[in-house]
Amino acid sequence: MQNSHIADDDGKNSRPPQLNLSGMTSPTSPTTMAHADADINIKPAQYGLSPNSGNRRTFFNRTFSKLEKGSLRGSIFNLVSAALGGGVLSLPYVFVLSGWVSGLLLLALGCGASMWSNVLIAKMATELKLKNLDEMAYMSGGPCLRKTLQIIIVVYVFGVCIGYQIFLG
Image (tube, rainbow, N blue to C red; front, side, top):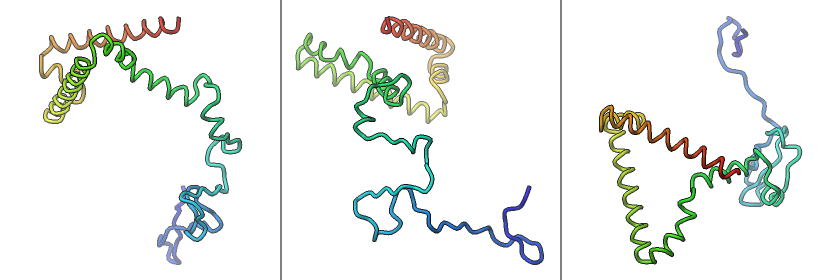
């Protein structure tokens, strides 16, 4: 393996090699403020920075084209819809059934309860240096609560798989 440092006359390493970056431009900003003509100037790099840099699509085509299977946009939409879930979609229906005043009170109650429980979980995890929910369940309720949590997680995952199969038809 060769040493990358430049050697002196006596054979000792003295300084690292210098890179010659003349003629190169930064891909994200102009080289000087004198060349700036907008808030953000993107100058093309000498070499392509990504595999698809040669065939860039316009913003309109990237945003409004058909969603392909396994595409980045499709994955983002799938993640957002899974994170929001059916609870957000059923929220207007609950407001219709319960009315505006009681619906807002129930929404505020649910918000407060979720914030309080998340703060409790965070405090317990940081004070006792627990790494996951399994350790928290064991510390707070012993082996019985740990086993109950594991069963609840298995039932939840099984239900998600069944719901996904029903959704796909």
